[in-house]
Image 1 (cartoon, rainbow over the protein chains, first blue to last red):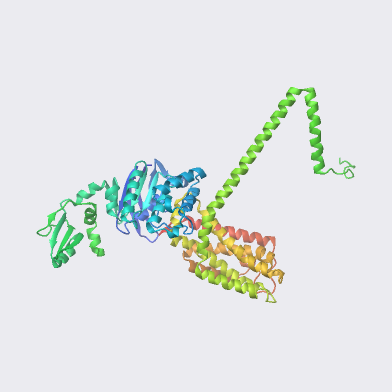
Image 2 (cartoon, rainbow over the protein chains, first blue to last red):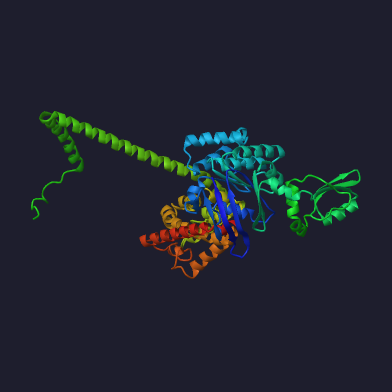
Length: 295
Length: 285
C-alpha cells in the first residue's frame, strides 16, 4: 500500500496548529516517526487512521483520494493505540476472536488467524487466561495481534515497545522487521534506538512540521564531528551539563565520563566519537530540550 | 350485478379448499399422463426442480440470516459485558441496592400512587446507567480502536443502549413482580409498558448529553436537572409527560400517540448521539 500525504495541516478549534504542511510518502517497509511530546505525532496517526480530518491537505492511498470509502480502507488497516486495554474479563483468545468478527472474518479464517497470531506474539500458552491477569508486555503483544488480525496492508503502531522488557522488545522488533517485507508499517515511538535498529526510513516531527524524512543513517550524519566524549570532575561536569546536550553520564572512580553533542567548539580534552541516532536526535532538539530543562 | 344468492351460499373453509385442491391434483395428473404422458412428466419434473430450488434458496436465506444474527449477537456480547462493567461501578451498585430496598419494602405500601416511590429511583438509575457509558469509552481510550475499525459508530451507540435496556428491564422486573399482587398500577404492564419506554427515552437523552459533557458525573447532573425541570415546569413537552408522574395522585393515561412520541424522541436522541460521535475531534483531543 502506498500512501501519500500532501500538505497536511491540522488546526484544532481552539486555534492550536498541530500539523503544518506535512507532506510524506509511505511505501511498503518500516517507517519510524520520532518527535518530542506535542510535536503532532498522535495527530498525524489519527489523520492516517481517519479518526481526525485534516483542516487542509489530502491523503492519497494507492492513487485514490480519501476519504471516499473510509470503511473499505479501514478493512486494510491495523491500528495499535498507545493504550490497549480491552475487555478485562475476556480471555486473550476471545478478544482476538471478537476483533476478527468485527472485521467480518469467517469462522475458519478467524480460527486460523487467531491461532497463528497467538503463536507469533508468544501468547499461545496464555490464550485462555483473562486479559486482566496479563502483564503490560502481554497486553501490548495482544494489541499487536489485534492490529494484525485482518492481515492489514497498512499497520500503524503508536508506542508499541513501551512497557516491554528487553527480551520482548527484541522479539517484537524482529517480528516487525519480518512483517515489513510486504506491509507498510508506521511506527511512532519515543525509543530512538528502535527506529535506528529496524526502520529503513524515518521522519522527525518538530512542532507540527516534518523536519526530516529519509534513512536513519542520513540523519545520524548530521551529528558527525559534533559528538564528543570527555572525562571531568563532578564540578566541571555540572558546568558542561548546563552548556551542552549531554547524551549520557557515567561515574567512574571519582571522575565523570560524559558523552555530549554540540554544534559549538567542545571543551579542551574532548575526543570525538562516532554518533548514533540518539546523538543526532538530541543535537536537533538541543534548544527545545534545554528550554524544558531536560538537557 | 351482485349475485343475490352469494350471501346465502355457505363459505368454504380455507383448509377444506386446500384439501380439495390437493385431491384434484392426482386426478389432473392422471388425465395429463393419459393424454400426453411426455409433457406431463416434464412438467412434473420441472415443478419438482423448481420446488427444490425454492426450498434450497429459502434455507440458504434462512441460514444466512441466522448466521448474521448469531454473529451480530456474538459481537455484541463482549461489548455488552464490557459496557455492563462500566455501568456497575461501586457507587452505582450501592445506589442500585438502596433503590431495590426502597422498591421492595416501601413500593407497595403507599396508598395514593405507588409510582411516587417507584419512579424517582427508576429515573435516578436510568441516568446513572447512561451517564458513564460513552465518557468511559473516551477515558479508557477504547474509543480509538473502535473508531478505527470498519464498524459503524451507530452500532456502538445501539449496543450500549441495548446493554442499558437489558439491565433496566431486569431491574424493573423485580418491583413489577413483587408489587403486582398488591398494586395493579405498578404491576408488570404499568412498569414494562408505560415506564420502561419512558426510561429508555431518558436514557437516550442522557447518552446524548454525555456526548457534550464527555464526563460521566457532569452528564448525570445535567440530565437530572433537565428531567427535574421537565417534570415540574414543562411536563407537556417531552418524555416525562408520558411518565405517570409521581407527583400526581392518579397515573397519567397511556395512549398509542404517546407511545409513538416516546419512540420518536428516543430515535431522535439516538440519531443525535450518533451525529455527535461522528465528530471525532471531540473524542480524541
